[in-house]
Length: 106
Image 1 (tube, rainbow, N blue to C red):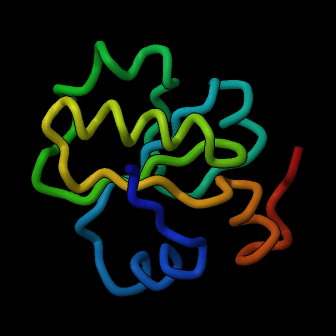
Image 2: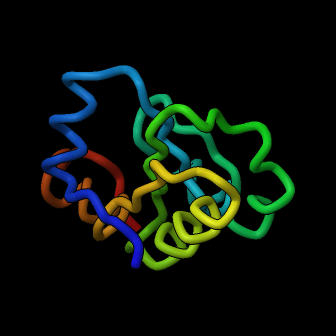
């Protein structure tokens, strides 16, 4: 089972640490609409080819629109040797709704 992080817990983590990677697995057109600052955009369908570009010693928070693709990404990363991969529960939509209501939504 994939571990998830709530938007509130992610907000706390971002304020306390810099030892993480925000990995947005949406398509570039979605990423252009809205994204969390300092996010790396690697679409889910390209992730298996690019996993070696990710640090294996940091927590990786996978992000998508509503949380489905990010769960798939966290599973894939776990299978590729990234034990600290977690999925943002509810995706960027939950982040915009609960943490940053000024963020563009789609």
